Image 1 (cartoon, rainbow, N blue to C red):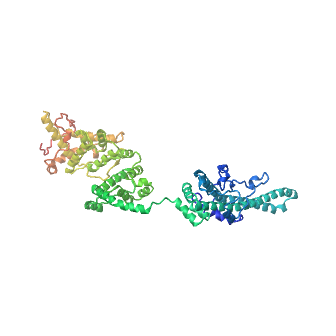
Image 2 (image 1 turned 60 degrees about the vertical axis):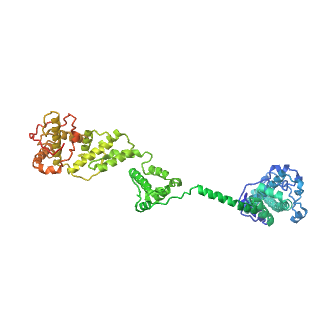
Image 3 (image 1 turned 120 degrees about the vertical axis):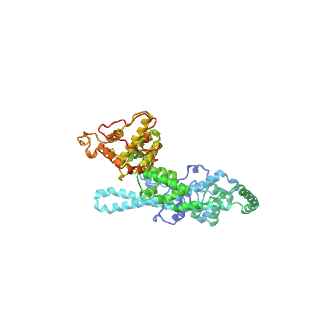
Length: 609
């Protein structure tokens, strides 16, 4: 039964059990007879209108303060007599069978009362009867406990307990009588319901079918619980099932409409292109066969962002669908990453865009990844790293740090490149990041053609990390000689066009040394120097570090090595310091004269204007 799933055969099973046998039943809500049942005229034949509800009857335990008064029970009637006389019991009048009697409202109310009374029976069998049995057993156990201890109680107190024991014994007897009465009435009520259903089925099947369809009761389970005949159970099932169309009419109609439907379908296929998903080309299949998907285990935010960008580009290159991209993640993620992926919600695992968001949130720096990129940018220094590696790295950090302003990008770049390249950028007057990178590439190219490399930093600012710790070829004395000689020659050309006097080749060296000294002083801790050079008599360095001595030695060696140094510099080589001496600028950047230098001989190098 739909309303009480465990009530099947419950009413019938309770009839054959005495009150000593306690069935294992689940509790359900107590149903009582509605109040409007008493307002119906008795001649309308409401079977349970005058039947008291088992849940509404006051048990003996509820009247302990007053005298126990039970209503007089109805006299049980033989079911055979009920079927013969068509009278269920003296308190219930039979339902008239004249067709003119039926009123839809009265009829629905009549069967609604049948339904309520049946639920009342189920409530009694499943819960109400067991509650009375438990109360009776509790009283019996209490009486036995008190009786077993009377021999140990003084006579005065024993006399006080005897009325209590007597009252409990009377209550137990009243409960037994009450249960016997309800068990007898249970069979009478069942027989009355069976009689009503059989009468409605045999004499008024159409009205009975309509009522079953409207009220949706009795169900087949109720019919089996009341042990109705198989014909009544089948009738109820047909009334509750949806109406079946006429098969003959439906089949004939479908046969007639089949040519029309076939014609319409043919025209639709002709007018509509059938879209078939294109097959993958041989090129794409070859790509997927040879391309290896990058894996991600764990790492810093920069590595996570780079992996995700590379994974998306490869998926686009291999023409993966969104489903393919999600499936490939089960192989591309490893270690902590795949464990984290398995903890995501289903909507995040099945949507690639949402996956990218949560991935960057977890591995890529949280809600503000630009802060991590900015921190990496502040720690970045070129040192001796080639510009071919340094430029892409700093460009990527600038983009991820959301620095898009050209002057600001150029400022970050100049602060982190080698000091020599920084001088070239300032002298050339670069205005964009790309222009500064091109200048640095040009300078490094000219140095590489001369067999030279940039010298590592003397000191590094606190908190900086060099990109590469591998020492490379340091600046040699030949480098100082070559750069100085080229600067001298370019200055002579400028002076010739500007009617200036020629200057000695030693004019440029102090400027060069001062530039290096100013750069180093910016990063070195300022403190009082006590070291004195015995060559130039200056404070701050020793003779082994004296640049004046190194310059003079290299210049003297250049005379003897001029023939060897010339092949290293091509005739078409462009001076790497050409940007320092613009032809239209009348400024003399090498106007400092070294008074300690006595050799004023100028060296010439191959140059083709």
